[in-house]
Amino acid sequence: MTWLLTIQVGGVTAWSLVYQYVPGAKAPRVVARYQLFLTPTVILLALAFLASRRWGRLPVALVATVLLLEQLNGYSPRFLDRPLEQGRLAAVPPPPAACRAFYVSAARTESRFGEAVADPYNHNTEAMIVAAVRHIPTVNGISTFNPPHWPDGIPDDPGYRAAVEAYARAWGVTGLCALDLRRMEWSGPEDR
Image (cartoon, rainbow, N blue to C red; front, top):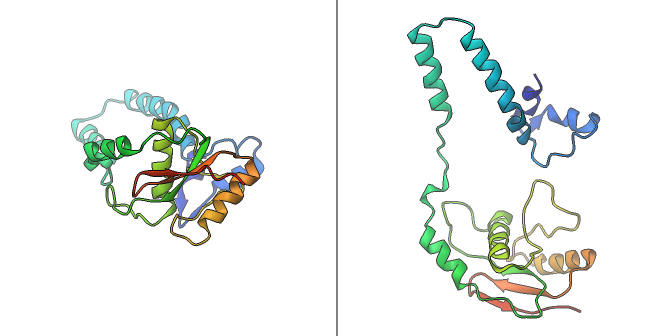
């Protein structure tokens, strides 16, 4: 029954009631993870139900077909150009020695696998990958719940750099550098 609360219809979910009134319900950053928590219980209940009766071949075949169809996913990054992406990461030079953190000052212009490029997701996810590979923190990133003052624009927005600088000031980030993902060049640090 609680699983039904996580279903979203038209951007509305009954989980908002749980989130508001149940202590600890705000802890999961992604409500869909609750479904992962319920999965073992649901599997055990389904197995117990199926084992409690002798089923004919047709019902078992129908259930198996439905379960197989449920696994189909039309959106998958299986067509990601791995050599291209590895080449892009290898093209990012090490940051300057004075850099303690970075932000993306220019995002890539081409799509990796059909996603929009002029949106907050593109440069933020790429910044997280660069941060992991180059071992330097980034003020970019994306999550279900972003911290206060998080710069939610894109590098081409007129107010983006000011938002990044305000975020860095608010959180005491020093040694902030910029990474241009078009030219694969660092600039900074930009401490003031």
